[in-house]
Amino acid sequence: MERNTFITLIFSAVFSLSACVPHQYHFVNMHLTWTEAQRYCRENYTDLATINNKNDIEELLKSVNDDQVQYVWIGLQKTISYKWKWSLGDPAFYTGNDSQYRNWAQGQPNGDDDCSNMNPGQWNDYECNNSLPFMCYRDSSKEYIAVNQPMTWRAAQNHCREFYTDLVSVRNQTENQQIEKIRNDAHITSAVWIGLFRDSWEWSDQSNSSFRNWRTGVPDNDGGNENCAVVWVNTDRGQWGDVTCSFKYPFVCHEDKLVLIKQNLSWPEALKYCRENHVDLVSVHSEQIQRRVMNVVQKASTAEVWLGLHHYCAMNMWIWLRGEVVCYQNWAAGHGTGVDCRDGPRVGAVQSGGDHRWVSLPQTHKLNFICTNYGFPLFSRNNFPGHF
Ligand SMILES: *[C@@H]1O[C@H](CO)[C@@H](O)[C@H](O)[C@H]1NC(C)=O
Ligand SMILES: *[C@@H]1O[C@H](CO)[C@@H](O)[C@H](O)[C@H]1NC(C)=O
Ligand SMILES: *[C@@H]1O[C@H](CO)[C@@H](O)[C@H](O)[C@H]1NC(C)=O
Image (cartoon, rainbow, N blue to C red):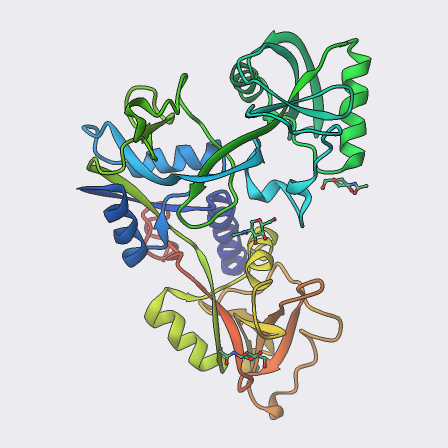
């Protein structure tokens, strides 16, 4: 009993740490062009690094373990396709299509301007170097803050990121009205900057992250050929620059932790596949991991998707692959209890649609499955010396 409690405690410690690390970054200390680096990352990991937010930058910087390095390639590259996107660029902030909500005034956007304002309620494109008051958003309190100090769009973005979370995103009409009301209550009579901007940069892995963290004054396309992005590691640590893609720099790859495999295999075959090609079938120890599973399973071609969950008849309990007790649970009604062991081994899957609940199935069903690339450090990590 005591031992179980202890194990549970250790697991919650490990998983609350890992849940905050959406990308696993790998620094590669070889000097390659951007395209060569992209190929290397795709062959050895998932792709060149994608960055969703400030935490990702910190994690990426931590992976760079050579203090001679000035900058590293990331997966951002300029294209010819300009699109409007939000400064608060983390895809996790949006659901469904609500990153695409727009409330342009009639005839807008109508120019070459790459920033946008709200005046009143309706949006207009506007030259980024103009100065306007602006609206920030604080994610911890879900609050909008009117700042009645005219600044350029970039200065406003810096201000919001320093004191709050970011410039406001507007995901639907209700939010648009709420923001307009805050502006009005603050007696701001002019237009205000919102977080909507336009650029033509895209991530190598097709991620929708519109988070950008450029140094002051860039991207400036100095010399006319700066189509790839680096993160500065020493000076201006964590800020981004635009650079010529054929230069040779070290780089950072990222590895998706959860990978949906769209093959139809039995549970034992799926387990074998994951252990040979990744690390293991996924274990869903927490709501955070369940949420990431929910993102991944939407693209599955089968109605259920295997998890690393199996029923242990001798003790009549469900356990994860490495013997962990199932604490966090998300069973569909009628599943997870009352297993009759005479019917053959039962294993667990998650529904790819609906509420994404877990179901108990015979292991011979042929389903898609989710492998994890995350090597659970529990039994090797020296954070927990001597206990096992
Ligand atoms: C607007 O978006 C927010 C955030 O996704 C959501 O909580 C809210 O329910 C939405 N409101 C409407 C009316 O769609
Ligand atoms: C990016 O967003 C578009 C439009 O909302 C969506 O169709 C697409 O699946 C998204 N891509 C990823 C990788 O999530
Ligand atoms: C897997 O099964 C689903 C549902 O039966 C089917 O639609 C899909 O084409 C199958 N995929 C493969 C790779 O056989």
